[in-house]
Amino acid sequence: MCGARPEVQVDVKGTANMFANLPNLFDRNFAMAYFLPTTVFVGVLCAVADLFVKGLNFVAYFQADVVVGATLLVVVSWLGSIFLLVTNSKLYQFFEGYGRWNPLRLFRFVERTRYRKLMGTARTSNTAK
Image (cartoon, rainbow, N blue to C red; front, side, top):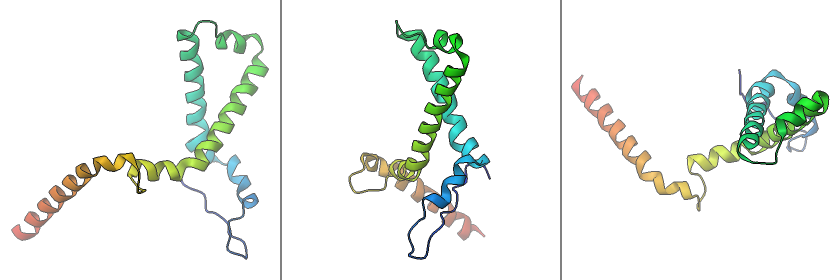
């Protein structure tokens, strides 16, 4: 499944084994869920920065030496995708509003209103039967 979280292998002590999960950085799920979007983001970011910031010449630099440019793109994308993999669960928790001091909890009333509306329609459909 694309984007599925890999299972964490646990050792005898019950702690997660970091080195047992290293092969997951080379599988298809990692490439499709993290590496490809990060590579597209880095490429678009370089193109936009080249258009709007004078003095930056990313496109000319990449065309001058293709091997160095491609290697730099892959390394930056790889590091960015590993960062995204590490922070993925924390990002989901932040955007879902977890945490006592999360600023997104200000919009909690929207979810409560949506839930109450959904429960109201569920009650009316159950009583109509």
